[in-house]
Amino acid sequence: MSATTPVRCVLKAQSLNGESPVWDAASGRLFWQCLREPALHVFDPRTGQDSAWEMPAAIGAFALTDTGAVVALSTGLFDFTFADGSLRFLAPPPFDPRRFVFNDGGLDRQGRLWIGPMYEPLSPGDASPAPREAPFWRYDGGGRWHAGTRSVKTANGLAFSPDGRTMYYGDTLQKTLWAADYDPALGQPVNERVFARVEEGTGPDGASVDAEGFLWCAIHGAGKVLRFDPQGRVEREVRMPVQYPTMPTFGGDDLRTVYVTSANHTLSPEERRQRPEEGNLFAFEAPVAGLPRPRLDPSRK
Image (cartoon, rainbow, N blue to C red; front, top):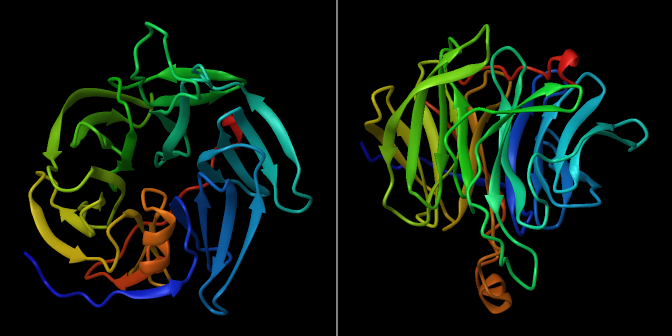
């Protein structure tokens, strides 16, 4: 189904790599990040104001806690406190930081943290014979990581079904989204299978699941958000006013507002001047509500 859905710009962020929007129902604000101008942002839709905490290294994912957030930087996992801006080291990254960065992550329904990689070697290049792919990792607290999925080059699309028994994840470069049976008690995906292939644009980017169990996924490079039914069929398409949407999430008092981040780092400086909407934060109204986001299980720090 293709329908014309009104999409509005809510923040002229012009972010190089806006990503990972998370709605905080307690404060009525939207948290999001920029990987390439590393900062954790918070946007208040009531005032239109956005503020940010700069990070000392590329930030690929975060999860809200009762006092702040756990942030996945290229240098490791840290506990970040909003009140004083302090960072407390939790764990080194489970990869060679000269070859990979964190790129997508989130919480299962029980508050376990999952984070995936992106292969992005530092200059002057990567002569290592080691694989250029890595899995999504589950962080178990106490500095312990557990490799839980097949290896990917550019991790994206992490989401969980409403009952927590299906895990979704993708690889943008392979243009594929997978689904796996997920044990909520053990936090382990099994029986992985292809959920959908997306040949448009660069491929699937970030994703969220609504209350009906449909997966909403930003299609990077194709200027759209697709809604997939639980069998992987496209149920609807929402055209975005930008070419590079990165991730949708549900927010607002009724969780029916879909916020979508976007990026402009693939554009030249001249193209950014000509297309100032790229990298902004957008919103549209969904036909169904989303799901409340859990906070990180404190035992996982």
